[in-house]
Length: 278
Length: 302
Image 1 (cartoon, rainbow over the protein chains, first blue to last red):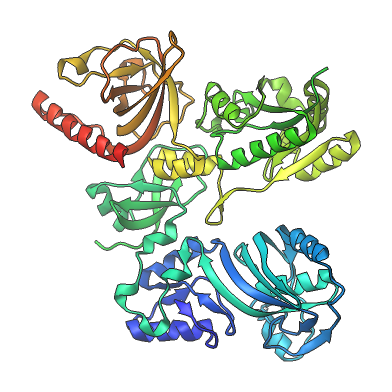
Image 2: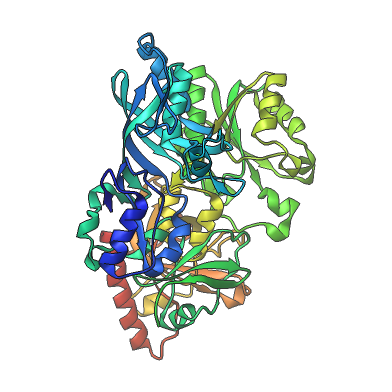
């Protein structure tokens, strides 16, 4: 889906649920209400494949405003601090941006869905608690400033799953010494899927759905014949050559049809998630 | 005393895109600091010595590694015998040896690399040793495909299940084997499908599932020192007279007529066409081989 700015990701899920008459609709990673762009929905049995796409990287474009810190790290929050940004040189900016490329320990925003002692951080934050979610490892694979019209930095970034772009904006501001928040965000890619191929929520139809096989794009595949297909769709294991270290899930196909995701144990290929019918 | 060098070391099974990123960093640093570039790998695979039961079949046999390493611009390829004595070296002793014997000034390692006894030589320890023994260290991040780090294990899984397309995507080239052409029974010639027969592959080499494959073949001619490239189809199946594990690799080359006995060929698996099967008659076999030939040509021309 091409999510507009405004609705929550869950609102979009609801629209699609109603439009398709399908109860099982999930998504591969929330977009905040103010953000727009690619929201990947998984429908019907494909929802069971969503965990396998959980590590897909995400690409964003957006704008970071320097000098103003907000409690949500985006433009919807309350300003908690302002600081001058006029002394920042292009060289300084380039160095700071460069320092964020690669792996770093990132603290999720106080207003985020991460859980602290079993409760969502944003619930605690809304009650006025001081919330400091635990930092976690993320990776900024690409980060580039497209245009620096200070105090606004237009950027493009590809980040690992689990990265908060609001946190990245906050951390860039902190390192520059002036603070910052995110004023615009648009997601342009999730794994192999592109915003250019997305449809508007109100335009969704069965025909707009893609084959669920895209969710296993990154997995090794095994082709099976008609007889083996019969076993796999009924969840029965196939006998295969053993391999020494079998720690990757394997996508099982009959021709172009995705049957299941399987796991190899010794010389057995065991279907774990079956998505094809008899 | 060895020439001062940028060194990387590891099993490098597959020389895949992740490995290629490490080698690119080695050559980049070597050029920048005017040092030699050295890759040290082991024979046999360390696991074959340390824990043979867990040792995987290999994507690249030691002899198959040299060409891709050279292609990456590495000047010196060292095949270190992985003896029980080497296996006993702890990471510190290992690093000292690299400095003393191979002139190591800088070490480039993959993000997940561990070496020395018990794989104790991880990134953190190496960075400490680097400070003590004053050599440089660079750690190269994983190369990923849709978030998934490309690894030898991942590629071995793909090959073992016949997924040569994914394997090629992660290797950065097609999966292949190097072999010597030997005299076969000449059965193919009698039905108009002459084949070249490869010497039985090393039992450590990972083969995709048995079947008929579309292949690309590079033939190195010893006499002229030239290389020729052909499309073809390969039958890969059991070879019972050489034991249960032995495999026969018979390749029919398209648009080729001649002898290649004793020559070295490089066979790339392109796509699996079908299972190996028994045919009720010679006519049925010939008809199927004709269909295979058309399917293989169509695949290779794509």
